[in-house]
Image (cartoon, rainbow, N blue to C red; front, side, top):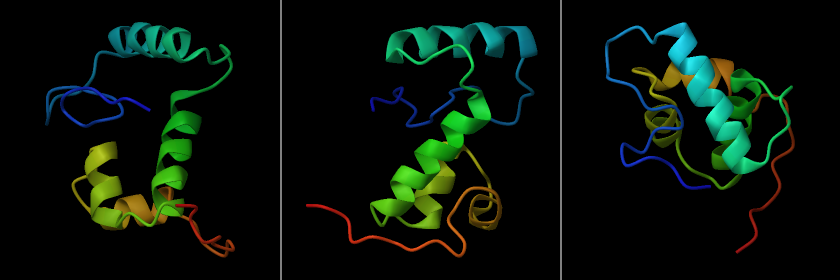
Length: 91
């Protein structure tokens, strides 16, 4: 999955609130570009990205950076697997 030059799944200037209308329009463009149905929410997409990175064995810090979380604990608490069987990543 290609990410923007910033390495973020949802690019924005750091420490600024995102304009809801702008984010909605941007998310619509991303869904169209990836061929995702309209009912896929941004939260579901972020969860998928986090799970894919977790399954590949990337650290919480790397995943937090992609999701733009200041603290990896937030990433672990909200997005990373708990009580889930981890499969060995394919190489």
